[in-house]
Image (cartoon, rainbow, N blue to C red):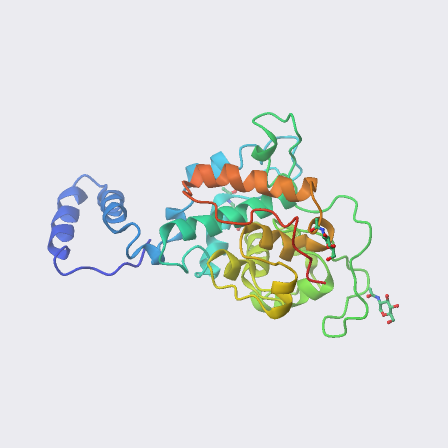
Length: 293
Ligand SMILES: *[C@@H]1O[C@H](CO)[C@@H](O)[C@H](O)[C@H]1NC(C)=O
Ligand SMILES: *[C@@H]1O[C@H](CO)[C@@H](O)[C@H](O)[C@H]1NC(C)=O
Ligand SMILES: *[C@@H]1O[C@H](CO)[C@@H](O)[C@H](O)[C@H]1NC(C)=O
């Protein structure tokens, strides 16, 4: 529920209205509806995530996530998403601008959908209705252990392959994600694909946390990104494409017609429509940006 400021002028109106309808047992819902309508776009920057993505929206976005064909069937439930978002209250709430808040959430959901997509060009309901179909890499090419990283040493026998909505990978991501979220990222990386709330939190941790020289995806989507001299020289301009660069720029940016980068944009457009984003913002792709490394 939103934590909004009460205007002294409107307070009596709300109290009266709420007490009248509470007799019908729907005070909370009614109150909330009117509240949103009046305050939308003004004090709404404290809106709860459910005011941007309702449970119905969630079902429309991820039409096929629980199909029998999807390995993640039954895993990524709405309440796990909501509880993870509550752990990061700045997510979808940093900007005073309602469109910017929705745009950030659409961008995050688009990126995790590409990372976990089960879609293909002629898939039922189109290629962008198949996000959250996978929860972990099925045949990892390696255990994603950077043994040179002494700050986050790999635990023998553990694999740090892609898991969860963002396909968190590498010991140097599992370690700090676990530390930030109170799970044993290095010793128990499996939890990212076995507890949906941890899975979403790990994805949001990646989204919210700058890993220099990269800014956070969050800062990019809320307009807080300030390019360095190196960023300017590499044409790393703000926009959805820069979040693609942060996530997988080495393989997808500085080239035209990259199918993965285009798939991310396709999800972003569809989700922008569903969440009512008016303007998707500039630089949807990263074809003309150099990657960070
Ligand atoms: C670790 O360091 C060695 C020596 O500098 C290098 O050859 C190797 O490629 C590095 N491994 C990784 C995963 O970066
Ligand atoms: C959703 O996931 C949570 C774990 O975060 C679990 O406790 C809950 O039972 C699940 N809900 C549904 C409806 O499956
Ligand atoms: C990729 O980077 C190289 C080196 O900076 C540049 O010459 C080339 O034009 C870039 N390609 C694209 C598609 O931006």
